[in-house]
Length: 164
Image 1 (cartoon, rainbow, N blue to C red):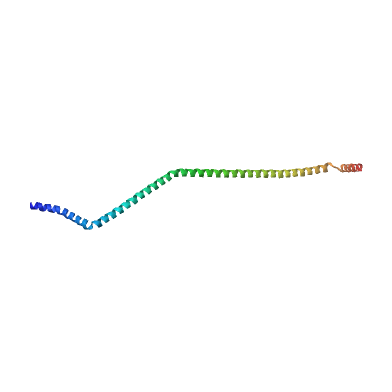
Image 2 (image 1 turned 180 degrees about the horizontal axis):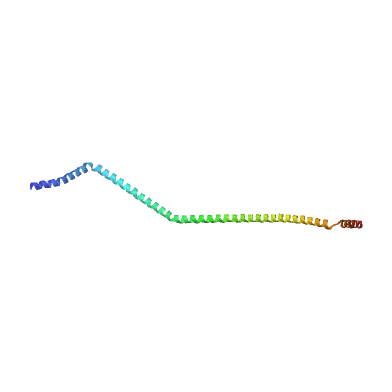
């Protein structure tokens, strides 16, 4: 029986020692332990509150960014449409300028053509006149004889006398 008691004492003694030590710690270090635990509790509580606040802020930022991202496709499409409209406007302006320039070039070409045609016609007329005069002179020399000349001079002198 003694061994059984001894065995029970052996099993229970660590528990007794633990509870005695715990009682001593609480008796003599309870206030410090309580203050430490309270400080640790407050610190953990503050960190939890900070974490909750940060989580709330991050969720708000996430929602804000998701809203911006949702609007980004529309904003990109709007920018693309504005760019296409600006490109179309610039294209029309360039085409209008090109057409105006083509019209001016065409008008200048027409005027140059007309001027060259006038000059060419004047040269052709001058050449025809020159050739005609040469031919006329040559024919007059061939057909007009001394008697014809004398007769024309006499007629001219008669007409002058009749005028006086």
